[in-house]
Length: 321
Image (cartoon, rainbow, N blue to C red; front, side, top):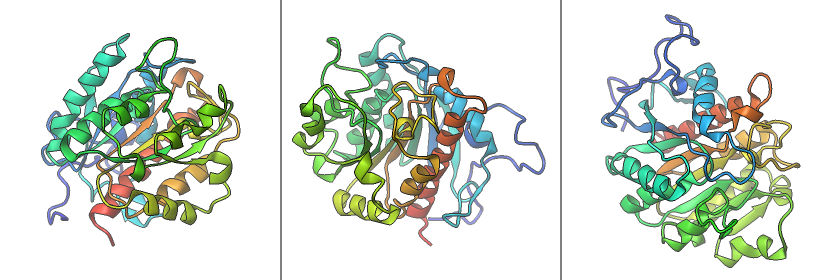
């Protein structure tokens, strides 16, 4: 329900203080400790121990927050007021344990569960994709098994890598095994790149997930993709995870496992916008690795704008026009 007196938390007026001033929070939103009065809580999860190739995503939340200072309150494509309608606050970073992925997943779940239980949605900034397991534990503890909408170059349903069970290629297999996800209500899209063998390509569907490879995804209109998602997820709690490596490295070089032949930034934003009307319990944007980003930080800029589109989806689901 809309508040007559406006949201409790929103960015300061950019006409009174330039956007490059102040502490770097997401979108220049207030930094708070308590989710009371918050519609969507933004949290950083600066963890990259689960990375199997190029590290650096521990610095992702900082980079995305810095890039997000350019965000303005209104989304003209979706015709939606975001800041000023939605109460958004930055709740800082989740405590993590470098070198210990299993413990970190427990820390993430412990921090997020009370926030989710309060009715606040979460938008987490990674960090490598391992963090999704901790997020899903928190959301499933409150809502039960969730449908997953994933945009990613990889399905992340592998089992073990050099003997490790918890890494950025396995979060959704672990979540499936723990009963956190409902594969029959999940759709994974954007997968591409070389694999270890034909069994890898079949793995998501073997577990019950529907998958749209990147070659098929780019042949769909944005509206067709949105309808595919709606037809799959049905009713029930949902989680949206966006891995920045779904973008081609020409647009997002700053990531740990780049794959050629991906989406442009424009295409990716349009696919997210096509999810208008769906209600999600939580969101994340992961795998931004600033050490590999280019001048002007195009990967961080893309990630901050994806996050803004996720907030827009939340506005449109909460107050449909």
